[in-house]
Length: 542
Image (cartoon, rainbow, N blue to C red; front, top):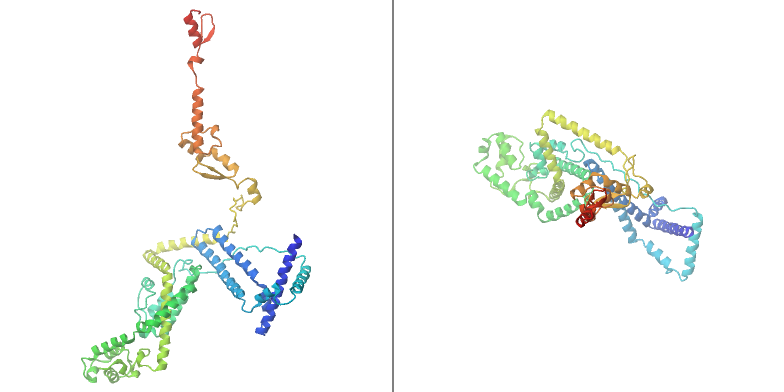
């Protein structure tokens, strides 16, 4: 009844006010600085409201996916962004609900104890006190009505792509490719080769990996790949994927990261072997000076040593490392970031290890992102190779076609979306007909015709009209049955065949019989049946 509904609403409001008051008191006790309006805002979003919002979001996402099967790439992508926004909102509300149900402050537990009468020796007094509060609240809001919240159409989040990305079909790494080619750590390669090897870093020298420019390049690359992934694959949980990759990296780094990534003892042995091969033919600084400035500079660079100074200084610096272990080399002769770990003091060693870890983590992240975007990388390579093979006229024509297709998609996006969850037929205005009209015409009734290949017809009118349509006529013709009024309302093949056999037998039995129907006339003009005439003739009566 309306009275019971009003009391239920009053109880809900009273419970919400009590919870809000308890939360305000708790905020003041714990923080002392929490604003009253903040407490009100939190309490307003109670558990029931959050559960309702989660259900509405789930329903909206399901209706968006089921009721709108998008055909174009751009529409599908926008639909995924809408559903992704719903899922993010559901996760956010679920986390808030979980925090509320954990009841860290004990408010819910205290409320349950109070409702059960455990907090006082006179539970009836407490019960009637709450009942009095509920009735007073009901008097204040006696005219209030509870309205079920409607699911509003989902709004598509703003998402944009560059011209090269073609609405999320291809990657746009042209700017990063230019930076790579012009950097010290890069190589002069074409764009397609760069795309195919963008996640490979084994060719970069260790000295270059410690440069800030290299880390800046990796950070920009990671930033772009993350942005593109979130725009092109909104339903994939990227943060969770990267967290798993980060855990795998930390475990691998802890086991053998420094030795493999930075070289460690293997790198020192390699440098020592190069030094021995270069300096073995020379017995003094004078012999090294005979090589000239440029040759000495090249040899110093191979060993990671400083290349500046006069000819004599370069020769002395190079000759000082002959027949010595790398750990015995003077740390002052090393070039920047080329000094091995063993030759550094503790402070520099820790700083270098930190840089190593950060750079390796960035490389690992790039490799993980490229792996998840593998299909996009391949599509981008194919698109670039196709463009390179086109002539100028063909390229202009393709650009015009792309612009026309984009305009068509934009125009179709601007059209109003038809909300039709019941799959009602569309009227003359392109909108679903009213449900009462749908029921009036019996369009909810399904009629199947086996002769038409189990075709379904909705509504009596469509069912009756189909008997004169080509599909039904072709089905009868295939069975060797003529179309006549006797076969109206016959939809089963077996029934049609049995009726046709019955009609043929009836027609055969109703055919002309000469013995019974043929007539003869005697000389006097009397007419007899043929059988009677023959009998009288034999008897000589006529």
